[in-house]
Image (cartoon, rainbow, N blue to C red; front, side):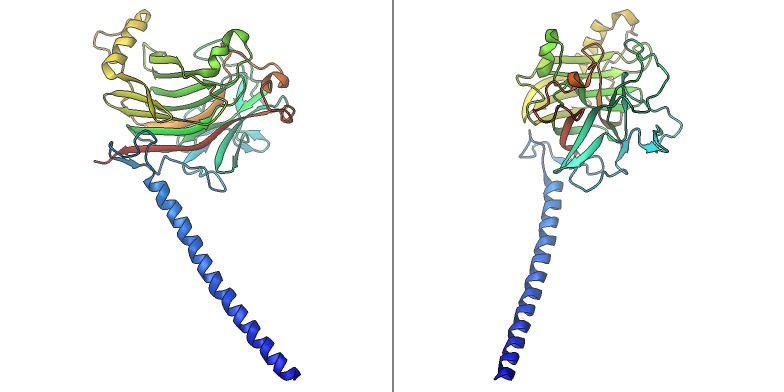
Length: 347
């Protein structure tokens, strides 16, 4: 009798093990299919403002990022101010002889001020008085010379360039008196897609909490970094309250700006030049000056800065004045980015 029971148990155990093995193979294959499906979905995703792909767009995966990996792809991004021997160092991996900007004083870029969390890149501004700040007080191109002190911020610079296309970011600005910025640099060109000041503490500047500021800047003489075109417009919501999708369609004819899939503003290349000639009269522009300088390859930037002309947090309490209850003591405020995507026309 015991022999028959033992044989039955062996048969049942064998059947169960076989079933577990078969189901294991099945779910493993399904897992790979899901991963593949997600990858295909990322490659086929379209601009939020053009879901039917009337623009014939193709995603440029070299400069786009979903931020859903376990670590930052440092072949795609240069993290400014990474630490070496207990201090931040500032050397671009692709341009080792070029001076790297270390941030707008009093804030300084730190390579430790970011985290990846729930499929998002989160850039951190920190109240960090004990940080090994640069001692030199540098005179900036714009504004007064201030020491680096108390505040650290984050900066990511794209390592690949592109020219023209549709640029989109889904993000939520920091609810604090710091800039949450998405911009780009090219050869003597600066293209500021937005500089959002999400939570001012200046009672006279509360309009900044819902303002989009974007610009193109010419770093050649005689303009020397001043805008050749700029807009400051109310978007109708606080930029730090929720995630929004910001889209910029950019080509040789001009710029179209979209917010949450809807056209918000647009300007032609001729209108940019007219604006530059009207607003840069003090620098004696040549008669044939072309203010539409956004005609060169660019690399993307994501960063946070302090803007002394708005307001500077002078204490940790001021930095975190708008932080939720229970998060006012950590000295950290977040600029959250769900993705950055760039599409270009299929030729």
